[in-house]
Image 1 (cartoon, rainbow, N blue to C red):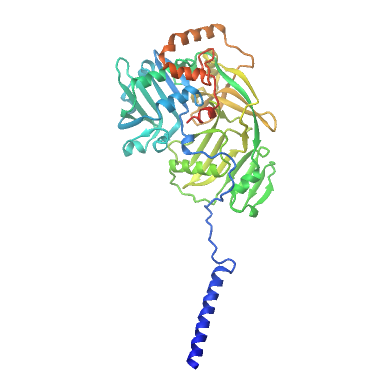
Image 2 (cartoon, helix red, strand yellow):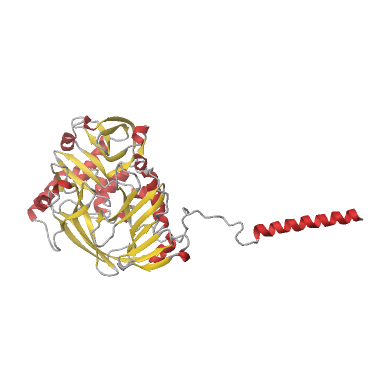
Length: 488
């Protein structure tokens, strides 16, 4: 009997022990809680549109060489840009790369005499990212390069098509000897170029239109993301953040580690995370992927943006996304900040993030034709510019200015990029109501009539009558980039 009692007591003690273990593991507060890493960002409700890396990789401009030292420039967001890039280049394969010194050919002669096209990438783009745009197969030397332009041309007097990729350091070129391109492809590029204003190249490589080019001034309605939305998105536990007002009038949120400064009357933010690991090694391609994901989760995208390599040959930690309004990029005009996102990363972790909280409406509220200067007038503006020796690029852009708390005005301007990367407005568009001289219009129309048979007639008709129209000087009136699949 005693043995049975001992056995029963022992079984009871074991059961009690198991029950206590269960309660300790599953019922006591604080036990079994997973520790959250500081590098895991809180998943919040999406604010803006999400995008893929492919949507931010595209050339800044297409330069068309028509032979006889005639040239033109085609900008993103126009129908001809889409026709050339999407329909005639993106689907082709580029293989069999051969490496040569950059001076292997006389590029000046080729630019003047051979028909072809150049795809330009501001400050270059790693081949790993370029593969998101084009089908590329090459060796490790090529795959580790950063490319700032691609040049496809037909050699004069032959049926040979040659394709070269230029390294950002200007020392090497890579020829794709097995590029899937035909003479007809290059002829089509040139044919589309015949419908654009003609440009003349300066001695230092700037392209200037021979006469005024038509653009559009626009007024967009806009809304603004709430700073509270961005606070909830960027901080792990918004309930632990403190808010204080800076003497400048800006609002600052902090959780003791990270900071979020809201400026410009709630329309601009600057986020910092100094607690992120400070490691020297940064892979630019990886950081671009991480940046796109970070923006997707923290504010999203308003319209079309293009990736810009801020520091070519540098640490790879600085990322910029430049905003486009129709076919032109927005140029920053302090003190009003708008038109770009800046990110700094360390080993894939965002340490700095600056952006506008403005999001544009889907449709403009007003549009007016504005003409940008060309020819002698533009050349004189360049000549009188105080930093003329530092100018490395001339391009049309949009200046964004707030009208009130619900509208932005976008006005076309000519802008310059300097050797240090700074961008400044060179000259404004002509005033409202300006019309180009009649003799210029007649000359442009005569040139257009002479060359109309050069491009594929069906594609030209689609461009002219399928939503776009050639203006009186042969230039393509702008389409919203969203109308053609956001440049892609």
